[in-house]
Amino acid sequence: MKTIAPISEKLLEVRQHKDPGYLPLVDFERWRVAVLNFAEDLRSGNITRMQRHNETDEVFVLLKGRAILFVGEGDEQVTEVHAQSLELHKLYNVKRAVWHHHTLSEDAMVLVVENRDTTYDNSPFCDLSAKQQAKIKSLTMILWDNQE
Image (tube, rainbow, N blue to C red; front, side, top):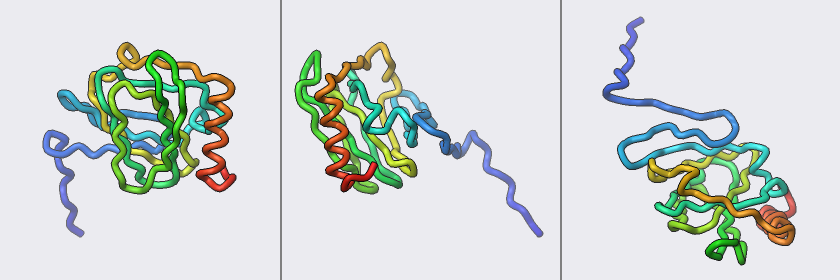
């Protein structure tokens, strides 16, 4: 039986991420591609804060499972929380400096494309009030028909 030699990584990189959470898979010059998988801190009942990126937009694409993208209005604090249920293979671009967070089903996988210079230094967090946390749980129940 003949075999084909693997292609050198100088020509083609093949990456995957199956563990919980976020992991960058490709960093190139000014951009990064990562995968976000389910992790316990992404359950709607565990969301206590939102993050924003002050220097770049960030793109999300749901590859499998279910995910809700929460976005928050406000400058220094979140003043209003909105929820968008992600549809498979659609591109969602969170604009620069918009507060956001996600909840994912246990089988979910989300592709993330962002500026490679996105770091904690330019991506502050904002704590959510108890009322905002309850709203996130309520929005999740509505969008997922009382299932989380």
